[in-house]
Length: 316
Image 1: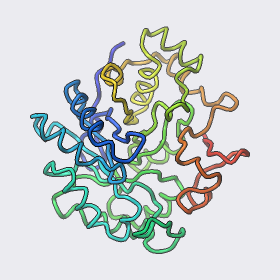
Image 2: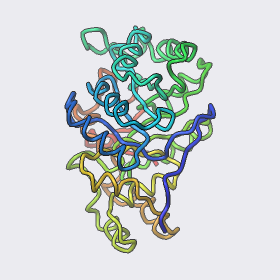
Image 3: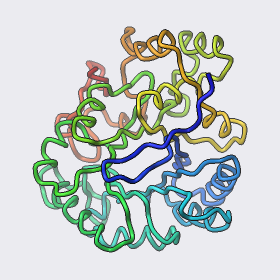
Image 4: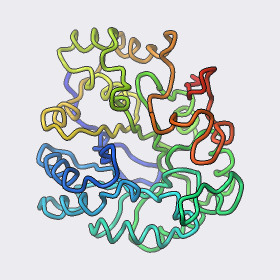
């Protein structure tokens, strides 16, 4: 059964389109490719765009939005504080604000709990600026009128347990890797109990590291006469998660916001696929590129479970 893109309401009352377009192009910059992708997406009906200072393409995203002629109030834009700006939140935000040049930013995320210095060297876990200190500085941004909502990215339950007792503002969302092989059920349950919505990056996997040819996913897609990507995205939406898939291809862009409502049988098939041997794992090659650590922190400090092979695996 066909389904339209739902709106999701954050804990502060603001609405966000339930599917967005991820603007990480696989490399920093790629401004003109980003600009063309966002222009095409706007023409196809996308109204939610996810970028970051670290992507190097905020200006291109903002330019495409300004030139579209679509009222600003109809478009939702997320960007993110990079690790090297944890000690200078106001400055980092203003750089993104000027790059985008779209009147206001709908959602500003702490990209990682990890901080680094102005030369990009990781700051050890627990050393200032801690993610608690950074969040307190982010909370001050709400008084500027330049941003409407604040959230985080790549936060585990462990990190939340350290942050939330000190937070005056509860994050509206936690953007994390979430897909068929890495469903984040326990994290979603925890976040839901705190009023925090999950946003899914890597909802289709990462580059060649994906599940779109998995026989079980193919079978459900063929049964419903849609693509495997549509199955994966619709399953997330049905869970109340906001996927932000990326594609530069017009046909795939259109497919990715053409949702369906999965039957209970099909939903359960996809929802339980991670339980099969060898399938419950992170597919993100960035977070797995150095076994046992990420941005100077151990996986234990991140609150992530690591399998015997050293790669991140799910704990559902």
